[in-house]
Length: 190
Image (cartoon, rainbow, N blue to C red):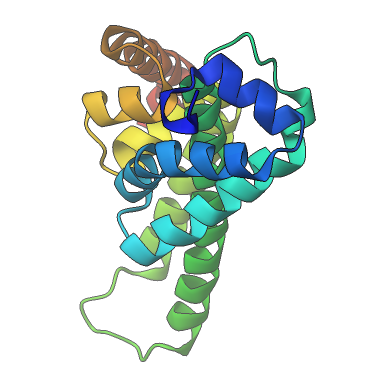
């Protein structure tokens, strides 16, 4: 039986035994999926290629822990999803640092908000960030993909492997939690 016609379970077993041709077939089969998910989440082809390589390297290193009786696609998708999240978090930290450096170096703009307005905006952003950190990690990731990265519910569903209705429900509930946590604080401020 040729590798092209191998089942995922057979391919996984052969990869666990260290067969290089089986690993090559796994990479060939799943590269389109990994690249599509990465490109959608990262919105950058070069970044998606880098993450794709990282995903297959991570999978190769951790294949001994993979259960060959389970389908490969969800494992590959989950590995890709988490690699992209790490890349996005790293990029967000770099962008935040660059923005802070740019704001310090910027000339005074007459239309710029007053120091008081800037302080209020910074306080509001910090408060929201603290409250969002109280959400479960998965809900934080869903909100990040939906609102920071601008992915549609269907794209979030594909990236996470969750059904679209589950994505919508979890985002709705996370937003409701945020509203309920922030409502007393916002009422005090008025």
